[in-house]
Length: 168
Image 1 (cartoon, rainbow, N blue to C red):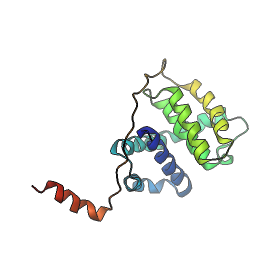
Image 2: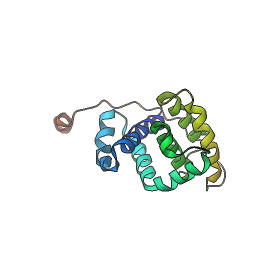
Image 3: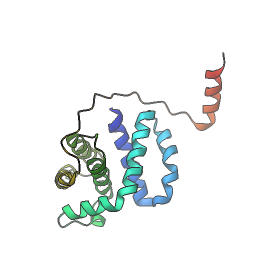
Image 4: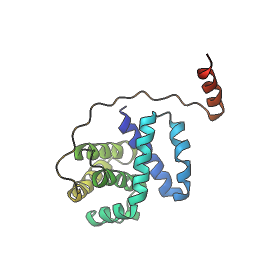
């Protein structure tokens, strides 16, 4: 799985938890990501997404509600709502992410984690959100980024492993 795809998946999972349990759990993000076994780069990108969505959530929600005809945020399934927040953050605040990538990744997340109709629902809303993108032109296409996932190591074993690596 591509590194950024994995990061988006993890960010969605944590955003869903934040939505259900409240923002007080933000401090649990690092442990959640470490236990996922994802690479450092994927964890870094997932953190960037989560923090970006949290920093801009009111703005993102306002944009989503404005373009989502006959839908309120509370009426949307929580998974779809958080996919829309994630992708809207990328569309409106990440100049380096191509529009097509943000849209395709969001649609795939919807298909994978939500209902059969979520892909088209998400696509319809994001198609309007992208019109508010403040950047000129399209971001350059990123090179392929396949990444091996790191094996999860329980915290109590990390020190032992680090000492062995440091030993001559």
